[in-house]
Length: 401
Image 1: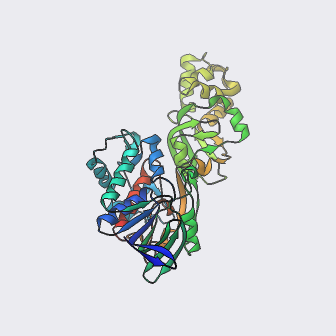
Image 2: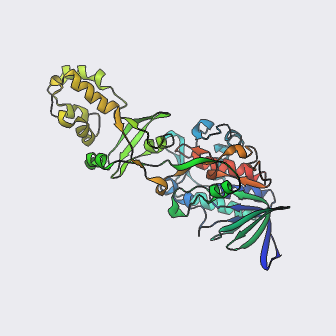
Image 3: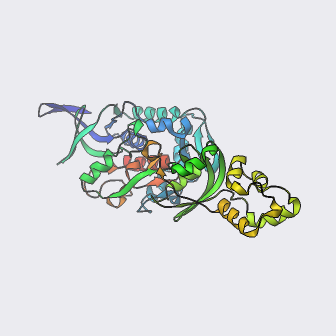
């Protein structure tokens, strides 16, 4: 790093200036620094990697054993392929193991730290420090302009000049951690088209009427199948006092469109119309609610049974049976909306990737400008995929800047 004077202000010069010390920014800084580039990493918050620290319930779901392009959403679905292939989940797992960080697998190949998310953040900070990267906190960009030799960035800490500028500022999900849509808005002001972005991997909220019906169900969890026009997903759902949450709800929120209705199968492992004849023959005196409670949480069974709960299996008429089956297997739910960026794990949408190289992540409009991570229109499923996108995209850019 070198320093000078310009217009009465001190100027610092680096080869690479990275805005955003989250997962993608840290990985990009690490790789660029290892290549011998002088790198400064600027973060507007008072700490780096805040989303890393809070992820996975404090244990960081840092990647997944199975990572394929089908696990990601984008208006340009081929864009993610190159980066994911060049820096894989196995590469990151190897880095984690080199640092002696113990980890374990949960359901569906999800990998978590045994101890704390702090282990992953400290690993990345150690890697960047050993690569000569300088980290600057509480440093916010104020104005950016392209120059004949690169980029000039005015910040609350002074003026910086660089050959390569990397935007790794993420999206607005979880604003209490300092997240904003600054990178997306700045890119748009520079002429980059945006894919409409919104909160995703996020719980649904319910109408006051539905919340009243579900008042006794808050805290109950069960496996369900959710259907929207674009996707079906099976997994665990959780009733909350605001609406519906749980892994399957977060997953389907990537595909749900605002205003769209949701179809819920509360008992995907069974079929009422198929099972009822045998149940009636074997124990016709059993009530509908009692029979259903053997297959679902009791409170859910009683709620679904409603006024029919005390009717014996032997006494249920075919028309009533079909209505009950529809209520259990094809429940119609209209979300009031989502909990929004406040609890969203990611931002769906972002900078249209058709204006960015899938090999280097360099802008196709402005030479020397790069975009990585969540700021781009690439969003992963729940399960470690968004972190893997951060590692892969950050690594690809780090090799090019």
